[in-house]
Length: 312
Picture: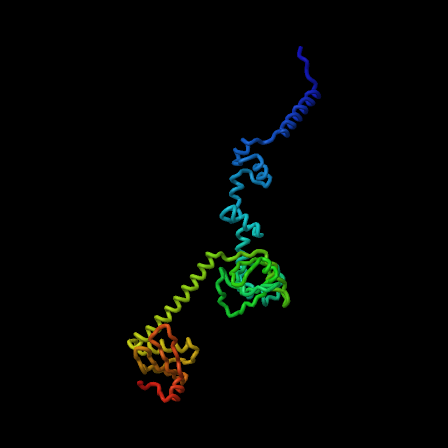
């Protein structure tokens, strides 16, 4: 005859079994095999990463993609400087010096629209004093700003100087827009400064030298064209080219009404031009492209007993 176990005893035994299972589960800890299955090199690494909410090593390694960066190293460098995502950085980069002048300088809502916002600007260090430094604000990558504004913007020179800037350096600096006032700087709290590398400086100087050389070549070609081929041009082309010389020199002319080749020899060519504003000039173009073109008013030429529009 089988004895039936009272229901109360059954419930008690089941409770004891469940407690034992729970105790055994709490005593379990992951081993190296568990860590390696998830891509980790150690249990310690797995514990550190999973505590941050990442389930696998791959998920952790590719977390930079979530924030728009190209690598973990790049993400860590940006986040160290306060940029949580690449979008945050791009938004700050969009606050250019031009943006500041156009949107903040005369904005009645300055404190809401501008104050405290971060900026990333470039500048050339002009001078460094005992307690301050001045900087010429530039555009992206140090390009000179193409604007009629002087951009005499005040930068927090004390915090700038703490970064060890030197005269003549091109720098990228990160700061915040200050309160709207006439005493404190426009940009305060320079938190980060990146200096132009020697290779970048050499490259920039090389590009600058190339631009100067190109300008000089264009001017030389222009003079050679005037000296060598101008006589072969149509009269209208002669007028345009000679008028351009006057305009570049700041001489008013309006439209050229008459041109005249007064003299041409191996060293120099003289052209005369009369203008719609009643002015007339003698333009001396040297054969040597490296020499400067000279312009004299015909009234001065007459004082020297030389008449314009007459062969010499």
